[in-house]
Length: 176
Image (cartoon, rainbow, N blue to C red):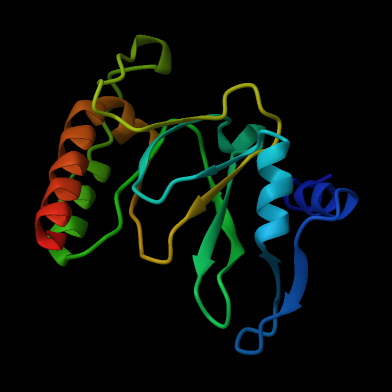
C-alpha cells in the first residue's frame, strides 16, 4: 500500500479529519479541526511546531513526518500539506527575504560529513522527537516556513539553531 493510502486509511479508521474538495484545485484535501488535533495528541503522534525546530523521526522511505498547515479562515483549522522527513530542520516563521536567503544558503550545502549517530544537539535547539512512531503529524502555523534538507541540517545544526534563535529574538524585540 502506498504511503499516502496508508495515511488516509489510518485517518479514516480513527475517524480523524474531514475530506473536502478544494474549489480552486479540484482536488480533495484532508482538513483537521480541534477534535482531530486532540485525538492525534492523545495518541502521542502530534506536535505543534509554531516556532520551528529540529525534527527527529522517520525518513521518507519509512513514512516520514506528515505536515498539517494551519489556516484562520473561516475558522482555525489545519490542512494536510505534505511530508517532511526526520532529521530535517524547520525555520521559525519566515518574516523576510533575508531569512529565506539565510536558510537557502545552508540548504544548498549538500556536503555530507555526518550521520545522525554523530550528532550533538545544541542546547538552544527546539527538538520535536517522533523517533519510534510509525505515523506522526506536525502542525505548522499560518505563516510560511523553510524546511532545510536532512544532509544540510545534520552538517549545520549548530548554525541553524543559532540562526533560528537570532530570528526569534529579533521577532520578540519587535513585539515589545
